Image (cartoon, rainbow, N blue to C red):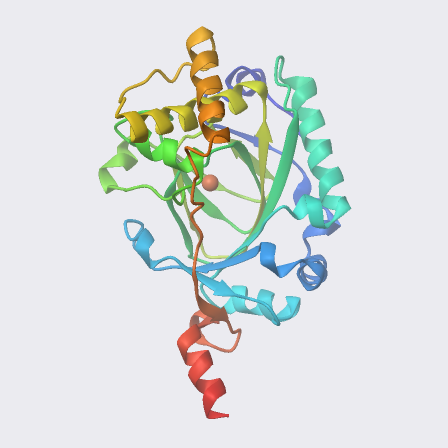
Length: 312
Ligand SMILES: [Fe+2]
């Protein structure tokens, strides 16, 4: 199902790469399967987002509520409107996706020497033609399995201060800010750009910033995240560095994931956290819209919904 070339095997996790799969032939991603999944999916884990069209304006991202909207209407809103559905932890909600993700990772681990994730998870992405995902970096390492439609993905150099301030990555690891990052067009000169078709997947080094624009079609992709000993250490080191930066003003601490310094720093942070010295406030999206398949854009403002209810 997943076949890697010798170059892909050497580059997995180290550089951006493109390869093939056959998930687009699976029955799990047809309209009927998606409607069934959405009808049964716990909606508190489904994030419907709408957005503007300028990749530099991540402030135009809006979360829309979807409770009470049927799976068929959600899909209709995606097809007609300007929506991005994040069906998070789809592997927890439906065992068939869990098995599929296990299968994908088992094929990766048998081909990539030394790749030993201890866990993985998946988010199904269902999105309208022409919508975008703003420039951002994710904490965990991830793989994007593209299944339906066409999309363009820009991948930027990982852990390079010219494209992402390390303080922002510390905040992302700590969960105190959204993943969106300040973006400038000139960054594109350093990007690797992929136009993805069904049956292709891409991966990039952990924390590499990226952004996406759908081309002229409805898109379905599966985003998987995996956790390894090394990726967990990176998260620990960045969260500890953030603590010492914000509490003690220590800047430019080492980001090395191995060695005694990393061990001592993360152990000290763990004690401080236990002592209640770092009560992190997790950043949450505030819903401002509601999904409405009959509205242009597929959403209406919540204040409009409230005032319409008050009139009736
Ligand atoms: Fe991402």
